[in-house]
Image (tube, rainbow, N blue to C red; front, side):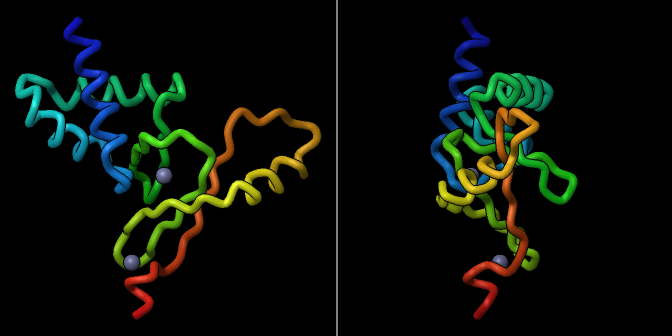
Length: 121
Ligand SMILES: [Zn+2]
Ligand SMILES: [Zn+2]
């Protein structure tokens, strides 16, 4: 039962933000409500949830970031401030998938790197 609650809290935390946090940041948030939770538990749960495709796991700058939004979308990573923002352009995924013939993809990860709106100013 406790395990289910921990998992639910982790998922809830991820779904409530758009910031694509790392496991450490998820841990800090979840700890406020479940003080006895450990970072190892958060890591384990996140990896399991990513495997089950309940959350998205993105590898950005050699670090794992997690996303509670599992709908098809793309990500933009700012090279200056490191901010990760969502881009919802389904046609990008559709176009990429259309071009693949000899392979059956189960998921698509598209990450754009560049300069965000705020850093352009
Ligand atoms: Zn930026
Ligand atoms: Zn996202």
